[in-house]
Length: 160
Image (cartoon, rainbow, N blue to C red; front, top):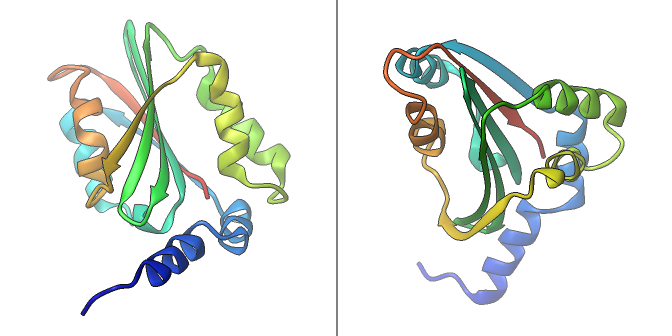
């Protein structure tokens, strides 16, 4: 079966539609997971995150002296731009995202609101990244980057 460019454009438009953002603006999810990287990945495997249904989602990872932020934004049917930042600490960034989600009250696109919270970090964009097959594929490299046996917190924010 072949897909025309018009059908592909319609599929991408539906995936990024305002009604989809409106629905998810009211029902975002944030999961905080603690432990060493392998324990965190095991916990992620048990969560029904359904990343393919989200246009924007984020991962924040923090351990002693190291922090990472990854913002995933769908740019096509099977493609994402991943914006990244690495530093020494998140300095309450997870709480600021939670406050933004709560203040938004499901009114505006929660993914766009979260991107605005992350903008001051000076994220580096990596375009044309294939869509991850599952949360482990999306997040494992970043989580494992904190080192074997390192006590770590990973925050998965499923936005719009």
